[in-house]
Every structure is written in C-alpha cells, then in structure tokens.
Length: 164
Image (cartoon, rainbow, N blue to C red; front, side, top):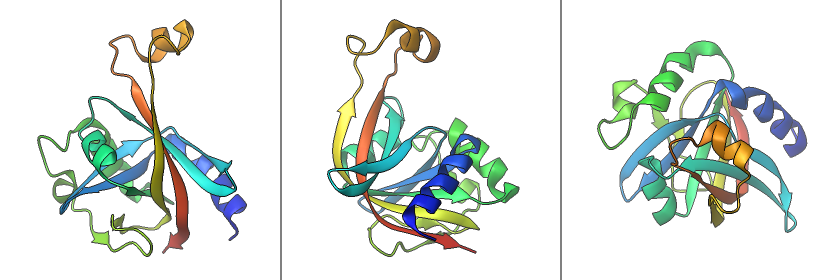
C-alpha cells in the first residue's frame, strides 16, 4: 500500500479511535485519539496529533522525540480504546489493565500496540501549543469550555505498515 492509500484508510479509522503510544525513559503509555491530520510539509510525510495539556502523555510527548500510532482494523480493541481514552497513565498502567501487548517499532524507540491494525511510526519535529488568543471563539466555546487546550505535535512519518 502506498502512503496516500495508507493515509486515506487511517483517516477513515481515526474517528473510531487510534492508540497514540509514547515512551518516557522506560515507561510506555498509550492514550486514545480521535483527531489528527496527515499530509506533506517541507517535502516529508507528516502526522499532526493533538494532546491536551492535562494528559499524562503530554509529559512524554514534550520530553520524547517519537511516538507510534496504531489504528485498529476491527472492533477487537473497542473496549481498550474506550478505557485508554478515559483513564490517565498518571493513575494506572493502561497497557497492563487492558492486557495490551507491545512489539518493537521498526524505526523509532516507542513500541507499537500489537493488534490487527495500521501502524505509523513518527518522529516529532515541532510542537504548537494552542492559545485562547489565537483560537476562534466558536471552537473555544464548543471544545474548550473548561480550558485544557491542546498542543499540536508535528511529526515526520518514518514508517507505515499493516499488522495482521
């Protein structure tokens, strides 16, 4: 599958949930995302993911230089996606709680959730924190009533493949 077809399929899956997995030293954490974008910037394939200021994963994203995205291809991960979207890695080991298995990534240091899925391996090259001053009122009123804005992480897609 070429990257354009891969991205098209990932974008179709994303609203159902994908795992964003991070590594801080030896601690691996995962969270569920439903938003993001993919394309090309500065001549390279990129993924942009959004992590709220309150999320435990943000600590690893700010310290780390890479992450992985796992887009499940069936409903077998639906319960785990729900759990990882509601619980914080500050309070619990979500990977152990859900019985998720990790496998080494091919291009980055952060592992991959082992399930039937599409996988993107990504190296962060920039981050952009949202601010109230630079975000339109309509978006703030709909998505950020309690504050807790996102930081957008822009990353080069270093690898992409399907796990079966």
